[in-house]
Amino acid sequence: MGDYYTPEPTVFSASDFNAAEDGMALRTAMKGFGTDEQTIIDILTHRSNSQRQEIAKFFTEEYGRNLIDDLKSELGGHFEDVIVALMVPHVDYLCKQLNKAMVGAGTNENTLIEILCSKNNQEIKLIVDAYERLYDRPLAEHVCSETSSDFRRLLTLIITGVRNDLSVDRDRAREAAEQLYAAGELKFGTDEEVFNKIMAHESFPQLKLIFEAYKEISGRTIEQALQNELSGELLDAMLAIVENVQHPPTFFAKRIHDACEGMGTDDKTLIRIIVSRSEIDLGNIKREFERLYDKTLESVVKGETSGDYKRALVALIGGP
Image (cartoon, rainbow, N blue to C red; front, side, top):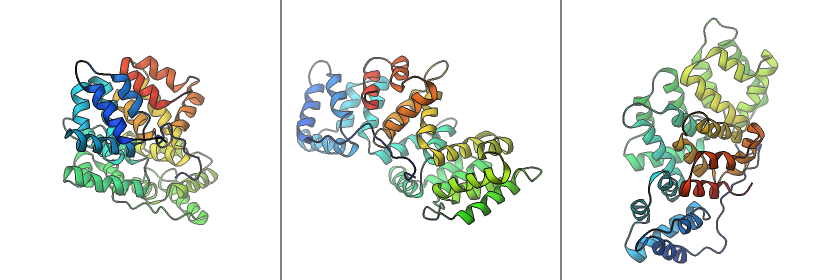
């Protein structure tokens, strides 16, 4: 997926890292009366996830305490959500977000789409393995129980790892584009099964070729075709795949914008994207956000958040 843009993180491994020093500083920041939130922000937003795991390990070995539990007892609100999200291993964090989207009343389909439709096979396999380890339940089975119809079929295909991540073939791309055209615009009614099969089976680079071929054949973009042929969650999922094939930072920049638009802020989405992409491509997302909306991501986040929550997110976003 990373062959057509160079991912730029905003959070890197600290070069002079010392887990013991950081662990002791965090213990001091939480001991006694009051909490030194700034120290917690300064340390945890400037370490990689693997370094944070080393700090947590030191904390348990040195003090016999669980660092996440201590942080939870000292912090609150969305600030706590950010800091705890930073402390959880990356793949486990995505699994926890998927689980939260499905348990309880109603299902948050947008979270399922954001996480599952933006990943290649290798990433999906890591999520599937971690999900079963964490919840003793197959992810495919849980998703099946919470979704329905063609949307369920698409997500199930993605989760079962049918995507052919190795294949890129221009001739086959044209054939697939013709199949999509025949299943949609040339037909009365839409054959969703053909759309599902191609969108879930082909690699992201191959899909890029298919979408180009589709435009040559039909004179319309794949987005226009999907919007004409599909609706609801299936449409949202397909458009998410298209955006992640073309340019993932655009997809995530738009999600952040939607999370901050209108009355109230969708803090869960804001936190999830900023934390989960900070070591991948938040630098690209930040630039794309400014290109699309003519304002910096930092300024929008500052306008939507406050206090330590704001300071933590701004630290992860990094300078302009």
